[in-house]
Image (cartoon, rainbow, N blue to C red; front, side, top):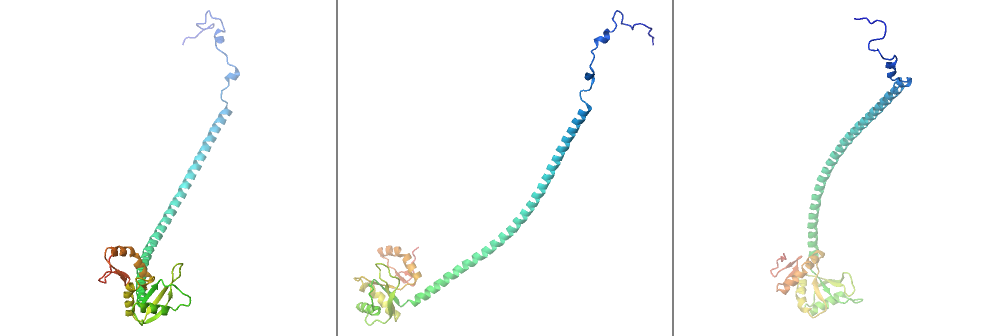
Length: 254
């Protein structure tokens, strides 16, 4: 390596001393300081660190809350499923009990109908010698037995065997209570019923059979149809709890 002697360095000839140094800008001490101080940097790092910790804490709390909710929902789901199962068993049991009760009720209703028909039949038998006189004006102190005896005698049935005769039923405005008559013998009652239509045609009162409540309902049920059949020449009579034709058999209205 070549050693340089004393004097100006090469290339500096004809140049003023200090020009090179002057061409370089000088920086002030404040400009030479770093733009971010260590304290500011530490503060920024600390703030960032705090934000990260806060976010992490919040996320952890949220995860914990979600887990707790999930656990609670799972418990509720299990309890709800258990309750549904128990209620389903209870409903199934109640349904079976209801079916049994329904059958029992149907049997009871059937039995009640049978008993009602039997009682009605017995009541019908107890009334078989009875008839009613409708339209006789009620008088104070009247003697129903004498009134009935006179009526039957005038009908051509002398010395009728009457067991008893009395007013029956509720009175109403414009209507007189019936006279209920019980003959001593059923055949006497039959003769009265046969003679009544012809013998009382011009009277303002008439004689009807003493029907039970159920028989009366059945008679009224087909009243319009019976009238229509009568206009067409078909005559029916009511007896034994139903309308019957001339052959005595129950008439079928259907």
